[in-house]
Length: 604
Image 1 (spheres, helix red, strand yellow):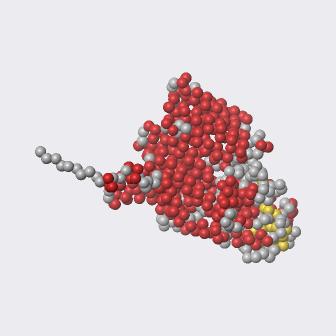
Image 2 (cartoon, helix red, strand yellow; image 1 turned 120 degrees about the vertical axis):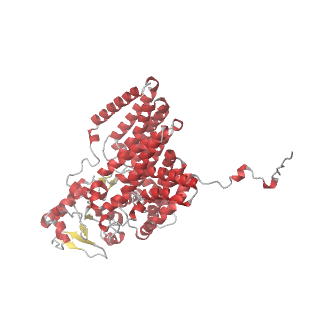
Image 3 (cartoon, helix red, strand yellow; image 1 turned 90 degrees about the vertical axis):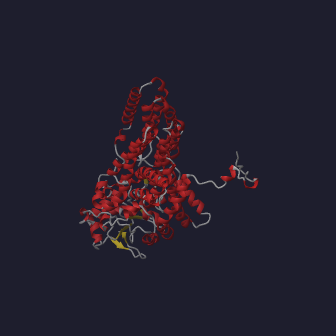
């Protein structure tokens, strides 16, 4: 009988376990950032260069946000959210908050250590949306890991970058309030789904804090937030005791965070006021009351042994709370544009592209709508498929996500801007599908097996859909134009002596941002008086318009090309039509300025 001796490994060649991991592999979320963000930066490089070299603003909200931040940094009080150069005196009190102002102002201060003030602001306007996009990649990666495991994390990050969001709400130069709300919604969805695991119940308190912070920024995502608020309550009604701790953490988080952000962002003098377009007493009362109801329900869990009993308590308490809120705050039944002057809808709001219904845009620009919505629809179908193929906790999580998607698709039918919040959530279904196909291809080991994840990724990518041969009329034009709203177009106006400009609604924020002049009108529903005055003035016969314009105290009147903002047929006989046709009334004196597409007149 013989034996084979095994030679010992020489001591010098032995590698201790700790040394074998001296160079750790990056976690899936970090890997997602390393893959997705360079791609995002490459895709948006043109916007980076444009903002840095021209100082142009992408959107009216970005220009108006810059004005608000500058005023605050120049000494305007924290709680004073009035734009004092906007509208009729003493200005228009904004429905925005300071939450977004803080990080942008901090970046301006940071870059100001090495750059001139103007360039520091441009650098901040580039860095801020890119940082938020990185946060979105991380947030969607976290949600994907909760739903589908590590294999879905990198696909989720790539799909977000390729899904159109980076070309819209997170484009360099954008400092508006929608992008942080999208990040917070994605993150709160992830934490809410994570907290459905009883072992991770504390995540529910983080969900509540994210809800409060999102509402402090704005109420645009309120329908999504309503679903997130319902998730722990419904999970408790179905499962009972295993979800009790999560419900308590969620209730406690709401009770602490909602009053805290309210006190931090709302002036004490406005604590007793209620609004449908901003966080106010009405919302605080409803959310804190809801927290009390949820906490009481959680405490009663030992006595509510059946799902029927829990559903009855939840339904009864919810109905009582909802009825009380409506009784105390009847304005809660109205939409966000409650109180807006009816004249503003046909001549302004109905023409704002982001609030147009999905079906209207599908008729006008079917290519653009397909490029944006097809990946989301396919991602939603994958999410439904994932829900059908999973069980237990995983199915509950997918079911909650599907509920969020249904609300998002319904909201998009009402107003297309809801789609920007829906997109990261819908693409989680695509990330699940791509991750599963990639895992299968990796097991197969053949290069040919990669076609399945590649096809699924393409179906969930707006970039891939955009490569189809769309007719020009089916796509929204992407050119920025000579643009009447470019910094170079407005620079000559900055040389004018101070005064108020009677100008079209969409021009207002850009005039404020690029000059020291005041304006009467801007695309904001709270500016009823200023917007109505401008619309009436442009609609009136030239001689009748004189009295209307002078009554506003305007020193100047400005229009740019044919962009009077009143392209409707009703404007054909008014001042807007006269100016468009070159018929200038005697009470308007043309002013000679530098090269600009604007025609500016002194009002006499």
